[in-house]
Image (cartoon, rainbow, N blue to C red; front, side, top):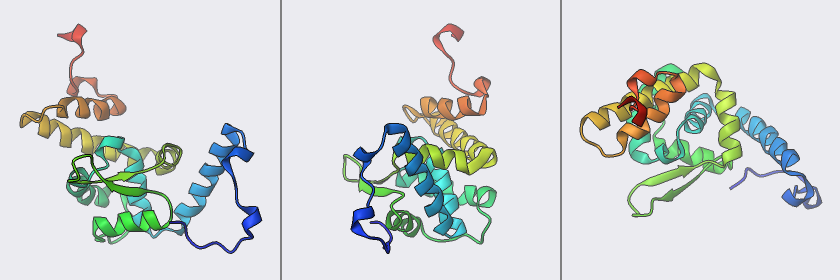
Length: 173
């Protein structure tokens, strides 16, 4: 759902009216504007979501990693429940939420253009904090025998430029 706009319906933007590059630029400008309307915690949550791999935008991963990240990335006295933060992003059109294929855990979806722009807007400190936290999270899961966790950790370690802690390639083994 989009926030209410005071505009003439004839002014509505249609994607087919623009080239792909123009449409991407329009989405980025729109995202920048909408982000400024969010409170500090919702803004930080959006930026963290954008820094996560798409498959990590699930309730279990968010519930475990958002609380420790708030101290590093949010300039506020944080404490809003995750469902409320997701609802705020949905209300502003920045994200959607749906159940996974097993109908078990909510997945938060962010349009790829919005996610890429949100990652850039987050800045290097937030990106590094997210990458370090999620690399640690997945490495711990891998050490507990979680299948696939080592690959997930490697993606975050790669972004940190820390190949020594990520999984080994076939050439290295």
